[in-house]
Image (tube, rainbow, N blue to C red):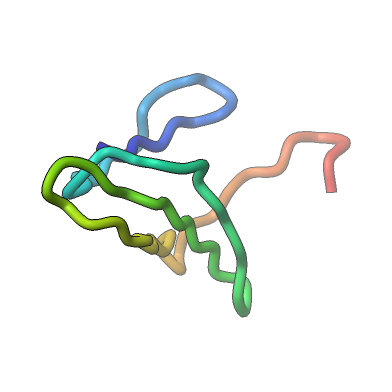
Amino acid sequence: MLRAYNKQTGAQVGEVWMPAPQSGSPMTYSVDGRQYIIVAVSGGNYSGEYISFALPQNETRPTQQGQH
């Protein structure tokens, strides 16, 4: 499972099943204001590959005071 947590509260806010164990550090990038997360997976009989997940376009994140 790839899990997402609220960084202010630590509460789990989402999870996505992955077909094999994560085998590398996650990467993130943004295109036209949309954030993507990429993870490498491999293991057992599963050949390695990268899987990309996109965050919802309507996702809004409150900013903390003093951060821009």
